Length: 256
Image 1 (cartoon, rainbow, N blue to C red):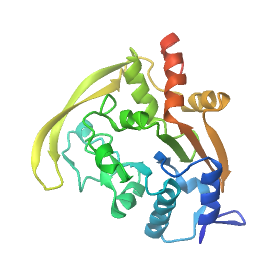
Image 2 (image 1 turned 90 degrees about the horizontal axis):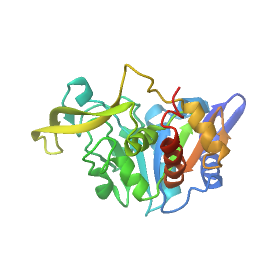
Image 3 (image 1 turned 90 degrees about the vertical axis):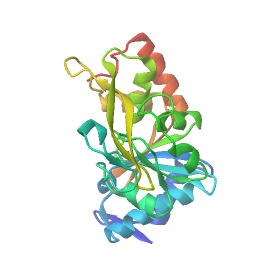
């Protein structure tokens, strides 16, 4: 199926599957996917069909025992808004909505929720924390899931914030956010979560290009071109080991 056009070349869904295979995405993988798919080129399908085709391609690449995770971050409690598990709109694009329409389930985090499709969706969706233990990122690490940067190798490093929490870096601190959580049945309840936020008054922003090149140099991050963008893959446990070792020596190493 013709999928994307970049300059004078047309890329098909088969081309995309072959790139994913070359990146060693295999049956049974758990993938956390951060997307800037607009970088690939001009979609040759209507938006809704394009998104569903992209999700279906990722699902097929992971197989029946695999899992696909797409962010549906809302930041609801940070903005003093209720979080409705079924109806709160994602602030990071609508690809996650397409995954939910295909039968995925949304995690219960009122800040960093994700759509999860696959064999472990019920286990992965119960996320009681934002960046700590029992967060989606902790579950990803436990499964030795992979992180896919889909379109831009410099975007998709929320996992590093989880590692900053594990390392207890001094430029972040725990802050409690509270609000109304609305579950699948429409029932409302008061809920609080701890989110390890940045100290705004000091140096605390990550340099994502530095992180990407650090992981590339160690051959943890592998990147291939696809159309006008790139697709990158990295194993979460290898990322965690390398980054935590650096943070233990110099907690500000990855800061801009």
